[in-house]
Length: 132
Image (tube, rainbow, N blue to C red; front, top):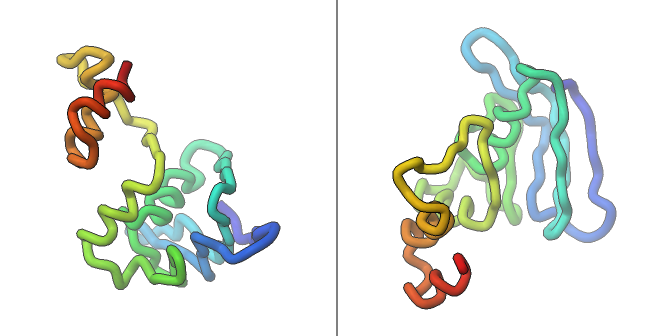
């Protein structure tokens, strides 16, 4: 992924990348990424295989930390957040990695309900209604 700047259309950014770069081993995978993302905005990341798309998305949710620059969520640097806070942050996002898969030992309904059970944030009745 090459250097570039993408500016928000209006209003304050919910997610902001400032001069973000990352090395994995001896290779610099991303460099000079500046990006503002507003609440409700849709972002599509497109690129060739191996260009850093997955690394970029992992930076956005704090699964990886940048070697250079900062990733901010609501003006909070993700590097400074505890793992507990990062987990709560990740619950606000929808993401699917390329190696994501369903559990073949579960029914479709059980697969859909699985994250709700793991998070424990809805009642059994609410879960049944959402899955139906």
